[in-house]
Structure formats: C-alpha cells, structure tokens
Length: 246
Image 1 (spheres, rainbow, N blue to C red):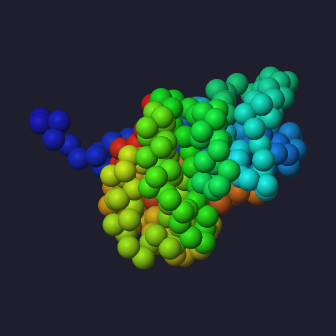
Image 2 (cartoon, helix red, strand yellow):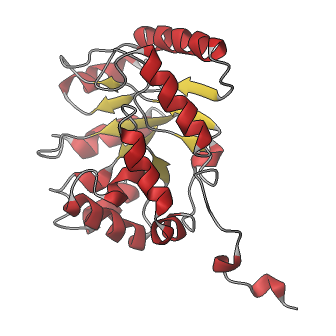
Image 3 (tube, one colour):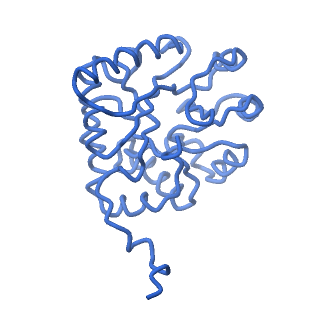
C-alpha cells in the first residue's frame, strides 16, 4: 500500500557501476599521454571496466600544449587500433573517444579552429591547471557556449584553489558548465583535501557526471575500493547524473 511513497533506500542494492552506464573520462588510448603505455594495459583496463558494470566508454586523451600535443587524427587512429585489439580479445563494449582539453594558451587557438573532439550533445571535457585558475576563464567559457559547446569541468574537487570558496563551483554552473566527479577522489586517491571537497560538492548536488579518470591497470584496485564502500555507493547512486544520456 502506498508503495509510491517508498524512499530511495528501498531501491535494489547497488553492487557495481551499472547505474552510471557510461564512463566519460579515462586515458586508455595507448602511448599518447600519461595513460596506458601499451595495448595490453588498455585491454586489461577495458575488460575490468566492463566487469565493474560500465556499458560504454568514452576515453579522453589529454590535449595539452607542448606536453601532449595530440590531435583529433592521432586520437581517432589510436581508437581504430584499440578497437581492432578489442575484437581480437573478444571484448564486446561500446567505446568512443573525445579528449580532455587543458584550458591554456593553445586552447584558444583550438577553439577558434572549431575542430574539437566532443561527445553526446557537443559536450567537451576540459581541465584547469592545478596551480591557479586559467586566465580569462569566464571569457573562454562564454566563447565555448557561443559556439554551441557544453563544457564539462573535469575533477573540480582537485582544484584546491577553488575550494577556498565553494560558491565558485556554483558560479561555474551558472556560467553553463557541468561538473564531473572523479570516483577515485572518494577514496583518497588524490589526497584528503580532494576527498573532503568532493563530499562537500556531492552534498551541494552540483555534480552532473561521474568519471573514473582511469590511467593504468594499477588504478583498478583503487577504483574497486569505491564499490567496497557501502556508504559511498549509497551516496553516489542517489545523484541525478547525465552519464547514461551520452
């Protein structure tokens, strides 16, 4: 009787990441950034992500001036090679590419060229420096939005200079940005402060996407810690997110 008044805690027990569906942040194209170094490691990571419940992967190599000067062509060629290896390994999973763009001086030029890797409805994953906010950040976001892009800020909980004033994250949302939580932030992969900020942002309900930010097989043990925590799973499984829509 009155079953429609049941609380969300009455929902089936969450035991994997299938409630997320799509992982939108990882570094699985081998040899082009600080992620997987070879195709064997890529296969290990992808197989495990599938076992953990993900049904789709959008892997996002770095595009960063001078350090990782990747291009859409380089990334697409890497995807082609990876897909061929997945077929040989008999691993059936939906996989595509975008990129994780660092907002730096080169990014302005890339934006003007209008040749950016996106996913879904023109979502674009961007990151900031871990030292200080990008110069002219608001202008860059405005220019992205004007061109029809929908910026997703990767792992905002790791930008500790923003955490001094949590309203900064709400301001970014007001500018039209989405925020993506790194799941491993919740198990101290990036330090206690990032964990603390991540939980505060979860409480503020400002996150829109989840991502693993998986770089290498060694990260899988840490990612698995998220599933081992009932309190973490209970918290994140209640978040209204957009992963399954991309």
